[in-house]
Length: 476
Image (cartoon, rainbow, N blue to C red; front, top):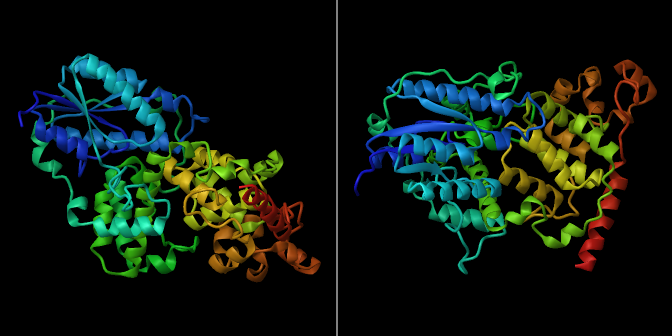
């Protein structure tokens, strides 16, 4: 293949040099390669707050990437504007023959990339896209009838059957770094120039960039074999905590799958299963983009949610009177993170105890989660709401008290995020309203003053949910 004289790599959610499909393709096929990142105003200006951990994480990761490029005599070109305008402008200014990117699957990003592709075509410049964020994408894993799967277990089996080392081997970017265009070092714009303020990213112990991802991975590999036993307990260091890095591509998904697939422990197999869920939800989003606004199972668009705004506010602020739910929501507010077990419990509580539309909760998580990913967030919420593909049956509901007793038996997680319950004994912390008056005095708790009474009765809410979903099922 004839080499291109020059190319531009437009980095987005792939902020790393190592094992980067688009960067590898550009370096291997071009004599000179520039790397660029756009702080896209279409995304940033729509954010509801000027203190956003994701923006700070991206900026710090870009700084590290810039330093890595500087070590090879180049640098990261940073733009702040509308990506659909900045990328064609920069490509024309540099006089490149092609722009390389990694696929993005979200509907807005697909539309943006199509616009950029058309603008580049007018300039006689190719837009070349590569698969990088997933192992298998789009139509690469289909049923025997060449249709997309709607049941995860069947998809997982087909995914695993197809998996061979070829699909997770790393792209040897390092062999071709000599093709990086020489550029003088240049500092990246500070957060203030982007219109944002610093957050508590440092205080909550989040290190951005590839180095931050490597530290977390090293820690997780020391305990991956016990992942299956530990992953459901929020007070225990069980998860990998890599989701922030996976979301913004400071570590390669191929690296993670390789590490999981080549270990024989139950913990590694369970973790690999979680990575497959990620591919599954990307596939669902590709074939069914309507799920961003509608139920995957169309009949459930008819659900008549009560949507009480006061109940929704209480849920958002962690004052429902159910300690495990409140702890999860307060952790989300304080750190932009929530343990996966708590994501299921809090989502179920909003939809099936408070009878609030799952889309309200999905949007709240989208604003708050550091690792927010449209495909996974939508898939998780529709699973909890029983409206999605392979979803939990509507008649199965998380009981917030029994979940608390099972997965936070000593109340350690609750006490961390609901400190007003610190003096409550273990046997009462999961349902403090059941304490006698003497036990409440001993714990220093006046319900309704220091901590709320339960906002709803779970048993009664469960009956309402059965009737709500039952009516829809009957009509369907």
